[in-house]
Structure formats: C-alpha cells, structure tokens
Length: 200
Length: 300
Image 1 (cartoon, chains in turn brown, green):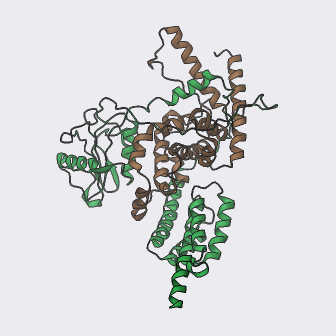
Image 2: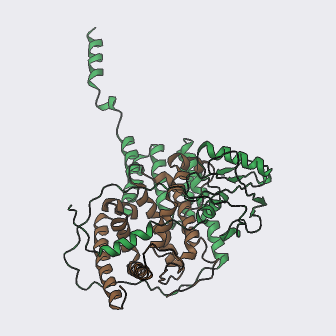
C-alpha cells in the first residue's frame, strides 16, 4: 500500500529536524575530526541501502541520503574513531528514516526490482524463483517495526556486535537485545504468513 | 556469549544481504555530491581535488572567488562535473573527477547568479534538473572499498518464539503535511539556533567560556525545547569546565548522563570534567622524586 505525497513537499523533510549545515569555524572543526570526503566516497552505497532497508521509498532515497551526509558532517566531532564507522552512520540513517516515516504519512511500500533487472540465474524459471524469494525477504523485513528492524539489520545483516548496535541507535544494551529477539520472532512469523499466502 | 546461528531462514538472510551488496543507481552519488557542495560541504580530498578543480576552472574559463572543491577518485562510477560559482558571491565550488589523467578532465560548468544555483539546462537531475550526457561522463566502475565488520559475538537465537508475538505493521494516521511556508520558517529558526551554537563553539575555541555560556543561555531562553538539546548540553558542560565552574559542570553532566546515556559524547565529557576536577598532583600528592629532591635540598 503506497501513500504518495507530492514530490517537493517531502524533499529534505528530514533535514528540518536535523542541524543546519555548520559554517565558518565549525566547518574547519568538523573536517579536522573526520575525513568526510573519504567517508562519502566509500560509504555512499552503504548509507543508500541502509535507508532503503529502513523503508525509504525509492524516489526519496536521494534526498534522504543527502540529509544523512549533512547530519554526518555536522556531527563528525562526535565520532569516536575507536569504534566501527558503519553502525555510527547507520544511526544517522535510522534517525533520518524515522523522521521521514513520521512526517510523510508513511505507508508500507514494497519496492520490487525492475523487471528488466539482469539476473544471473541459468533459466527463466530460476530467475522467477529467485525474484520471488527476494520479494518475500524484503516484504518480511518491511513487516518489522522500525526500531526492531534497525537492530536486526545491524546485527543480523551487517554483522555488528550488539554493543555497537546499542551505541549506534542510542539505546540501552538490554533494549537492543530485546528488540533483536522480537525482530527475529516477528520476521519468522512474517515469513510464515507470506509463505502461507503462496510466496516461496 | 555463544556463537549459535540465528533461527532465521538462511535463504531470507541471504536475500537481504544480497540486496545490500548492490551499488546505488548511476548518477545518484554525483547528484548528492553536487548538492552537498552547493550547501558548502566539500567532498573533495587531497591535492587531487585542488589540482582537478584548478584545471577545471581554467578549462571552463570561469573565475570563482574561492570555494570548495569536490573530487572523487575510486568511486563506483567516476564522473566529471565542474561547478564554478560566481565570484560576486564569494563562494566557488568545483566538482571534478577524472579517471587517471589529471590534464584532461571533462568539465561541466555550472554558473550561479545571486543565491540560486543555476545549472545548464538539465545539468543535474533531481533538484537541479537533468544532466546532458555530454557533460557528465561515466566510465567503468572501480572497485569500492568496503568496511569489513569487526568480529562480533552473535546473539543466540531463541529456542522458541515468544508467545503472543505478532508482527507489527506501521500504519500511522495520515498527519497533515506542513506547508512550504511552515517548512521555510522552521528552517529559518533552525538556522538561528545553529548560529547561536556556532557562536558558543567559536567562543569556547577562543578561550572565552563566559561568552560561550552567554550564547548557550540565550539559546536555552529562545529555544527551550530543541532538537539540539544534546549538542547544547554538551557545549554547556565544556564551557563550565573551561570557566572553572566545576559544580555546575558536574550537575550538568549528571543531567546529561540521565538524558543522553548512550551519547557518543558522554565519555569525552566525563573525561573533561574528571581531568579538571583532579587537583594538580604536586599539591596533594607530591611525586616521590620531588620529595627526594626537596628533602635533599633541605638537608644541605
């Protein structure tokens, strides 16, 4: 189910709740702490897909990726270089996605891959099966509440320790464990339900 | 912590991981980079960008009053785009990237008049229009370095699913979207907030904690409820420490710990307060070597 909002009203909506771009001395300070250009270069795809997995619609991904990098730039002084970078980046993506979903009267949307997407399967049947499996996985993930989904993505898919997950999402460790447990249970139920509806 | 595998269907996990391994669509990186540059955030690195920027400016024949250079080397898709902002604004931006030959960048020129960024017809899609294919060159992708996750402890999967757990779907009532005017107003207030916090930060750096505290108090009076609470509180603690008001610093730190217990700034704030709280070693706990020197001197 998709609830479309006119383009233009949504653009950079998340930025409204995030700090504006720092100026003057703050710019110099930020650049001293973090190699922002390098992070942009290396982690663009990760941020993009983090937002996608957090349920941001395809047409809004570009705006929100921009917003995430603006926030990253502004808060670069808060980065602890002793910790892995990606959970920290994911934390920004999570907050931006949360605002976005609140503000855009979000409705769940399953974004299937375009039909002309090249697949690597040896046959048309294999491709169809693979495609259905991918759709099922995405739809099952979409069934998770956002906070639980964020924990699940960071721990189960990105392989980060729960300590890092809790730190990135700014939640107590026990809450992170609790969310992970619930996310796993919900995902299992969602997969079961989807398969009962005929998906592979 | 054990390393038991998750109870999740491995096929589901494989599909979800595969999704994340794909690259973002062509051009998205370029457009986002151009927008960052247009807001004053440089996404350039090192001498390459400077050289590329200079070459691009020379090639385009556009003078710029200074500015930010953007260059990307080793991007998934290398691109070439030059942006030169008008000298009158005192800002300039260049987005330059090339494959390997620095002397032959293909440049797309962007001119700016006033405060509005004006690109050639269709220069950059999204907010800026659509780029003509002869102005943005894509070449073969270079391998993108990825962050390898550190070893982690896997949380054991539960033996059975908790009873009564059902998937929760996000179905919010449709809220009214704020009007464009309201958003603009909000942006203006955010800019005002940022200016106050910038002022406090600058004062702190300049060694004027009293001025920093004044700016922060102003911010608190004008914006008692703010999204920048964490930032403001952190600055206030630092300012109190710098001003030597340790009692207030400790009180603020205690509040900060309660409110932002998971903040990434917490450890450095604690350290700042702690360092300042500890009296100099020679006052209360003289070093043995000094004691020895002193007693030797007294003996003489």
